[in-house]
Image (cartoon, rainbow, N blue to C red; front, side, top):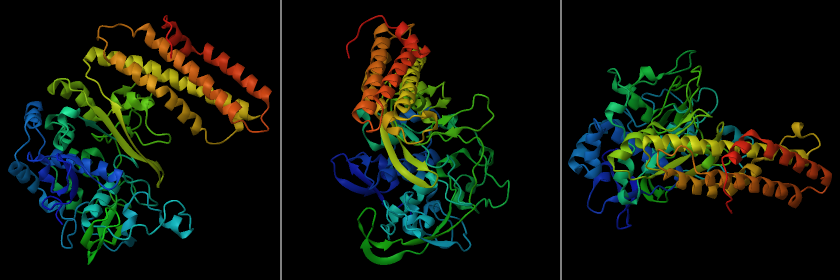
Length: 526
């Protein structure tokens, strides 16, 4: 199967019918495609990234005027087909005599593995050997159709977690977050959802002439990394390489030509993949990589390379909004390049039509996938002054919430344990309750402040009052619930009372809380 020429991407069209298309059909205007229809959420995100990578590689606009031309009117199908066909030879899924998509160029030997282990959540060899695959069982997936195999292979390569000695981690680190801009409902076609995340060529760092295999890495021999110092840094490859990074050395075994159903999508197929070969020490990515679709944490002192933001325990919410949508100066976090360009430039090109931020990724514990997170956060049309104000104001509110949660957890531990500093255990249920209970008010405040003029020197006092009252109410409410309503039988009431008194002193005496209260002069009911 050729991933450029053949139909393999599952989609939904405008009339709500399901279909399977070739990549160039994303620009069809007759009953256009409105959404990808993948059988798994991680495949959904991967297929978006596949098509964005393909457009960025083959059809990138020179500047914003060129970009706007294809935003207002889809490019013609023959033109897209010609552009994509230039790389078609590199997108053969199975090619015993040459390059194959996302696979080692000439893999010698290698360990034979079940096709199911392409899936990130699949139990590892050790887990199976010691019979610990209790929740995600082995052998659930024994065969995949070509489309699901290609998507699983791409998903693994771009998200690759740590996987034992020499099994290299992805270019963005294991289980990175991906953030994409989704336009408003006026532009609901898949073409717009992809095109809005394409950077102009002038926005991508200029690269020296490099061989094709340093753009699409499977076109040449893998940079084998068994020897010390054999790393791959950004300066060695073309910037487009980031969309097609390939840390794992994999080669699909021949297709089983038999009738059967794919264990992923359920479709009947006469060609099914059941196994592949793998070997360690593939591309070893190191250095200051900054992938255009991923937010990063930057070191103010520039001593360490940027660190990609990951999916994390407890999910994604408003506490992450600032770093994912703009920048969080306190934590050193900065939105993905495509998001920053949208906020600062592109939103003006499309006349201020605010969209949403789609964030997704695995929460990884080394090589174990704990969860898949998929959420949407608001974006706003802001002029430069409004943007500065909103970053400043929301930064204060989020930091106050973090401080309030810290105080809350400390005193709950004091009520629960005789020696709270030595107590170990999972406190994530407290985090979850706190962030969930304060989230609706935060987004209410966010919408109000985003509409204020950029010349507004300070957020209205009512904003600070509302947030102060919200934090106060939820901190003491959650404390009562966690200590009185669910208290262990041997918990001493006097410990609870003492902890609550300390919580009051710390909350009302906290510098940040006092600052929020000082800015509030109006009474607000919540």
